[in-house]
Image (cartoon, rainbow, N blue to C red; front, side, top):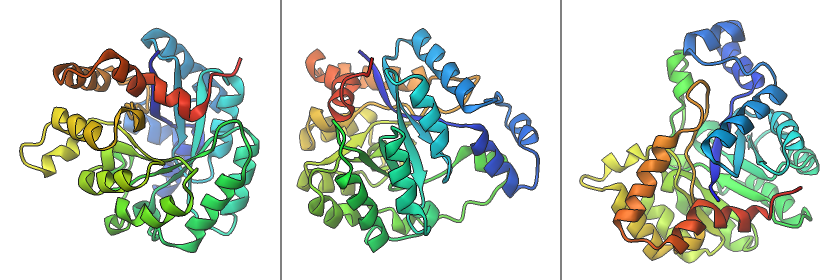
Length: 299
């Protein structure tokens, strides 16, 4: 079983949002990027499931990647509940943030994604705490998940469209989650990309807070910020500090025609094999932990 805990769902709303910031039509933005038009949330969900069938992916977490797009992943999950888990990007500083979370959870979405550097707020902000309260109060067979992007943040589509990225990376330190993680010990917290350059801080947090998980997604180019650091060393250290039960495989796949990013899987699989990580431990990373976090697939 192979499950991907980090796939972006670039819906029509995603392209309309970016195109609007450039005062251009969504179709023009899509052509400029050289990507496929998703047509609709339903069509995109079907496209991903066909891709997962081809690639041998059992289930995946799909991330609605602009604020206000939770309905897209809710529709995708409703079409393919046995294959897809829904996440959505949220700006907790907006007045309707808590209501958006409740509405999304009621529609079957399972994860809230925070990008503090992008939206320029502190993880100590009381509004972030209120989102955690909503998540922990929501009753489901498996807990909703809080996904928090830390470290270096870049959005490839923004760069290709010539859009500025006035992010504040000082807001994305994993250590700023320490108080929240301790206050809500039953709330699973996922930090993607091994902390995206703040690996040490992510490890420190996860070591102190057993509800914190690391996802392995992307090319992990952030390793260049630590001279000589290799992907093998990243995995070896993460498994030593966090253990295999809190490491979630992800690719950061996002657009078509590229589709599912198998090269990322191949690199990570090779790294784990070279370290001599057992098949049992690899099975947790590549699928078992996903099932434990999100529950068994719905029929």
